[in-house]
Image (cartoon, rainbow, N blue to C red):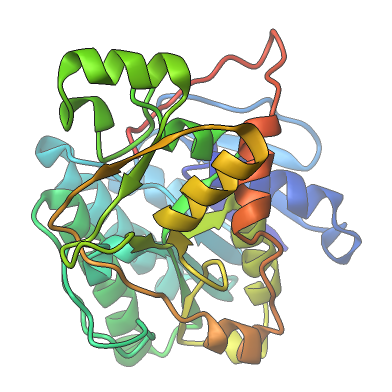
Length: 326
């Protein structure tokens, strides 16, 4: 087994590679990391190909003798790159995959941007049958195009592929920083821009928690997943016969309720909260299909997600770096 991992130096790529190397089920597996701006140290089980998947020759070289692809490489809101990398790069990988005699499975890690995140109102739980609904911007559009392209390759060529659609992926102290009123905020909303500057400074100093309200004035519900739960689903889907040509929602059992977050942090850490109105919509991703087909279960619930982030202590050689803003 030779697994090609694109986006290998990101939080999911690094965690997946470590998990494969530490799992006795895959002790014979070797990994090829396709790296662009950053790289990884090579050893007997890990090799590196440098370059961009937007380059057909790089994609073809990376795919040589590969049995499994885990596709994580993506672009955020970078219109100048998104078509070449997210669309063109995936096309070149899929073309090389379908022409290969060694290729067995193509796994795409998608995102809830493909179904609108919290920008649109849904009448019920978001299952895998919900139609694509990209929110404004090129990133969400690219996530739709990635899923559609892989699904069309199932239809056109019968390849064995699967899509694991994840919401916002957390690790270490990420979740704590999603709630910051300071400049260290991770992702959006950017809370300091939603209150007067003096209030933002005071909230940042006190650790005040933003209690985000949805368009109906209720505490917003938003979907998250911890990186270790996503990676456990990836390992469950790897070579799984019931994963063939399937799309799975991979998320916590319940969405994060900002009201429950505020209550938990007030109770456990004495932090105050401030309500932040919004035009966003609460939603609930349904992960039942992954539980049924893959016998997978997430281990992080709301309390564990919060406490793990607030208890995390960074070592001196582990500075907080955010390669992408969300």
